[in-house]
Structure formats: C-alpha cells, structure tokens
Image 1 (cartoon, rainbow, N blue to C red):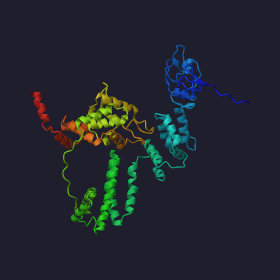
Image 2: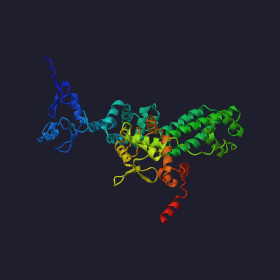
Image 3: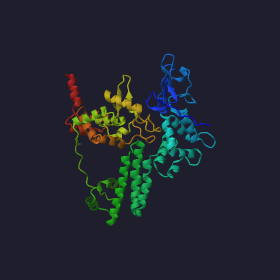
Image 4: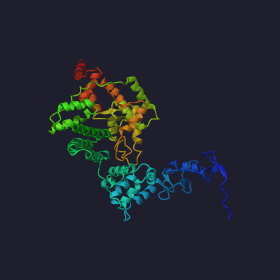
Length: 488
C-alpha cells in the first residue's frame, strides 16, 4: 500500500502563510490554526439570530451559519448544537457537565448529595473552560473525587489532617464558600495551634498567664472582629505580635526574679528603657492584668495626645494622580477604581476591599451613586463609567468566587480582595494610598461641614472635626450662618 501523498501547500486566506489548508471558510481555504481561531468567534447570525460561527454565505451573500445555508453544522456541539463555547467536539458547558458529574458521582452512580452545591457552582461559572483547565492541572479535583467515593470525609477535620498547601487551602475555602462546610477563617484558625506551640515552650506559670490573656482577650477580640467581618490580615498579624511581645515581657520579668503579680512600676519603667520598641506592645496585656487583678495597677506612661494629621501630598499632585487613574488603561481596572475611591473620597483600602456590590447603585436617570456609609454619593461621569465597567468584569479571576456579593472579589472563593493586592500596584505607579487619603480628607474637610463629612465618608465626628480644624475651616456655626443667610 503506497503512503498517502501529503496535501499540497496553499496560501491561507486568513494568515497569508503557505500551509496545508483542509477546509474552506467563506469560500476560501484556511489553515488549521486559523480554522480553530475562526471557530472561537461565534456571533449573531443574520438569518436565525442565534450565536453561531458564520463560515458560509447565504443566498443574500451574507456570512451566515451552517443551518441557514444548508451546510453540515461542523462547528456545533454534537450534544446540544451550540457553537459559542467550543471545546473539542462538544461545547464547554456540555464537556464540563460530563466531567463534573463523573468527578462528583458517589458509589451509587449519583452525584454525592453533600457535593451537589459544588456541581451547581461549577456549572454556573462564567467560563467553563477555566473550570476544565482546573480539572486538568490541579490536584484539588482528585480530593473531591475521593470525597465523593467516601474515601475522604467531607469535614474540616479531614482538611486539617492533610498537608497545608495552596491547593488544599483553596479547595477548603471553596467548600466553605458554597456551603458544603461550615464557615471558618483560615488565617484565624491557624492562630490557635501557633499559640499552643508558644505556650509549650514557656514555663508553666508564664504559659498559664499568657494562655489566659491570649484566649480570653486577644482571641476573643478576633472572634468578635470575625463576626463583624473586620478580622483582616493586619488585625490577625497585630494579635500575633501582641502575644509574642507579651511572652517576651513575661520572660524578662522572670529573668529579673519577678512576675506580673509582683512587678513594680520601677520594673516596668526599666523594661521600657531597655526595650523601647517592645514596650508599647504590652499595653493591652498590662490593662488586662490590671482589670483581672493580676497586677497592682502598673502601667506605661500615657503617650502624648495625638496631634493634627500631616498632609504631605500637594493638591496639584493629587489631581495628577487622579488623572493618571482615570486615563491610563494599562493599569488594572479594579486598581483604578479603588485608587480613585481613595484619592477622591478618602476611603482606606481596608474598607474599599470589603465593599459590597450593592453599595453601588445605577439610578433610573442613569446616574451612578456609591454609599460608603449612610449617604449615597453621586459619582462624576468619568468615574461612573469605570465603576460600571468594573461591575461587568469583576470576579473573573476565580470561577468559584461570589461576584454578586463583593465589589472586589478575590481569588479565594467567598473572600474579597486583599488590600496588599491593590496597594502594591498603586505604589508601583507612585501613589501612596495613606498619603493620598490624607490629602483627600484635607480637601474634603475644606469643602463641607465636619458633620456632613462624617456622615458621607463614615468617619467619627471627632475625626472629621480634627480635619476641619486642620483645613482652617470652623463649621461650628454653620447652621446658624446658613439660617441667617436665608433670612436676608
């Protein structure tokens, strides 16, 4: 049998290169690469109105789909016929449904009842191809398969027994986000075993005191913050630092033949001299020890009253940074929106990243408002367009995110974006968020009464008052002045 003759080379009508062209598109030969590219460009067919691959001409000379032109539907899914999400011979949704069902099926041949929310979430994702890529490249689906088969329990305890790595932690967060596992705060949960390791390395008397302080005060406060949704990475890091500083202080007391019960004010002042940087970190512990009767009321000297905030960014430079974020399309859209919220409305990144999508409202007249605290603020048109574009794109980084809840959804399922993600990108462009926020506060305090400023931006009255004083505007008589002007 003679070998098959290779196809002759032909000039591809799309890329212009000499290649083997085995198929005609719009009556012209195309190579395999261009054929695949064309198959991914489904659009509205002028004949049937469906989203199809327009590879043929109809009787009116218009590009149309195979069905409307009497051709074989070579670009259609062999199962459902759709052409707008190709993935081999099947479309992405059909391939995903088959793969997800195979993955989550229990020994009885049905989707495991506990994992049904996983199946539903995977199928509802905006890009089936992203999920299929996860199936092929991650070990996480293998854990799901073992859970569906009953080889691994569907519990937090099962995850705690696994090696902690990015894949395991992501899958655990995913199962929490879709309701398969009860809520938990991963970073917060890791504090307890970390604390136990510290306590195990201390003498019993020190471990007893530190354990009570850490569990009854530090961790209790973190739990309250978790319930309020404010247990940020910074808050947890600060709690760890407080525990470490307290352990060092107790060790220092023991080395000086005393303890928290017998220590004197002189001992504390000596520690503050020797360890000037560490001493402020034990203020919370000293206050707790005094309230619980462990100490005799010793305390560090009260720090000087906080002065006026400092503004180091000129208003001209602030507006230059605003123009940069409004105009520069090379900066990620979510970074531009978050940065403008800081530069225009003095919002801290920690608050911005926790914003919900329902804090943005598109009114019947087309105007867009954002509510940072209790009062909606109408956005200028240029910023409103960016916010609307962001709303249309958010949540694409992770198919398992909950894009309908967070305004800035993160890559971890069910979580919002972390502040450092935005902060780092702003700093790369020369924008220091804290400096920008203070400059914005200075400007806003000069434009409105402190009470209005507090209501709009969610600041305390005392904080707003300090900024009003700094901007050299005394609004204390604002109401009376306004009433007098109306009667003139």
